[in-house]
Image 1 (spheres, rainbow, N blue to C red):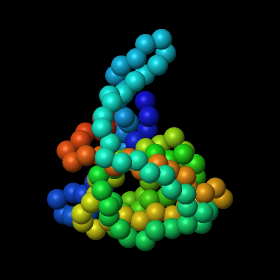
Image 2 (cartoon, rainbow, N blue to C red; image 1 turned 90 degrees about the horizontal axis):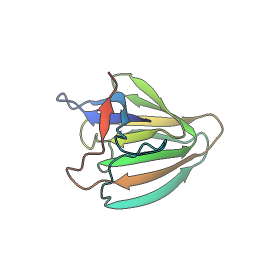
Image 3 (tube, one colour; image 1 turned 120 degrees about the horizontal axis):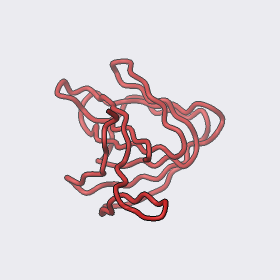
Image 4 (cartoon, rainbow, N blue to C red; image 1 turned 45 degrees about the vertical axis):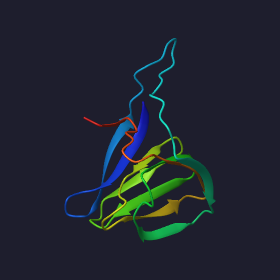
Length: 128
């Protein structure tokens, strides 16, 4: 399983998160394989250590694949979660109060953005 945090907007227009994983139902001989799906675009970005981004919403329905660096995210309700290399963020809070993040540690944040087509399900499964 691949750890995934889903960041979405609740009916009070607040960004909220839930921890889960990406479903990997297929595979053989030790491989677990998730469903293939289309992407509208893929891009890469790097932010230097000590980087931050103040309150904002996700610009699109997207997967953010952390390749390096560790971040702390915060919602306006004060909830926090940490993203580490290998984690996936499913950013769906394109409206509402938004979230902010800051890099922790001395590594840059290297990541890939996978913009999902409208209505595309990414295989997120909430943790039970």
